[in-house]
Image 1 (cartoon, rainbow, N blue to C red):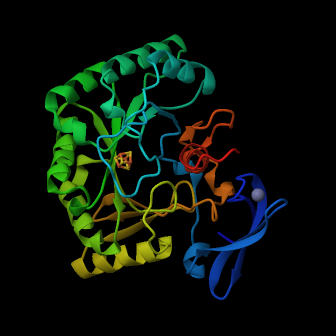
Image 2 (cartoon, protein in one colour):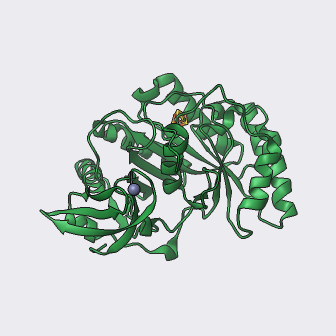
Length: 342
Ligand code: SF4
Ligand SMILES: [Zn+2]
């Protein structure tokens, strides 16, 4: 990644504006000017060499190039970090509205349909929703490929997991944290949920950990080693300034990677760097042969949109075009959570 021109957002009005990556004082900044809100410059990386070494090869693209649809605003957890900020007083979207989103808003060769929330598993009619989406996909001659982005807690119920498998879910993506985050009981349910998915033949596409503190990293890495090949990939991400996030120091991907590497060296674990497959917010490495995706999201001040020409695609805000998930959760945060008129 070199100093080049790109496109970013104005973090006040969220319009797309020209931006430039510049290097000074041994750090990388994003320099941009909104015609209405003026000039800004934000630090995007503290390690220039690391930033310039990031090379992306979209040929090996492994994120499902799919479409992500929010099916509920409710959640059964209440995490201190949450880009969605659930509201359990809301009514869920009717199934026919979701099916018409699948049918009409998304291009015909889109990949997997990912059901997201807040937390999709709180929908009591989830098996019926999955069945109806499959019918819709069949009608449109599209692959019947449906995944769930979930915190995994509900999958601790084996009978329910079986129902979901029978309804036709292809894969799950499970979001977790360090065991102290939600308490051991919830954490244990999530681990049982992973096992139940495997027992019922649901592919665990990834288990992703959002970290509250970098000093939780070692135990999270140990847990990943113990889970081994239960999941196809593991993700580790620190919180970012989108949605609900306590006022914490900003993380940078280089520090995140350095911390993990230091732990691996101390433990004698192998470290095999992989070519990252999509954008500068991800760093791919196999640790003891297990694929890890180390992630640090940008926020509206530092987003580099040239780097987000990839799925998963979403249209969370009515009237706005379909774009990458990270851009969409920023738009959604501004419009739905903050009540801004964009
Ligand atoms: S982060 Fe996920 S699991 Fe946690 S409150 Fe938000 S939607 Fe629920
Ligand atoms: Zn502006």
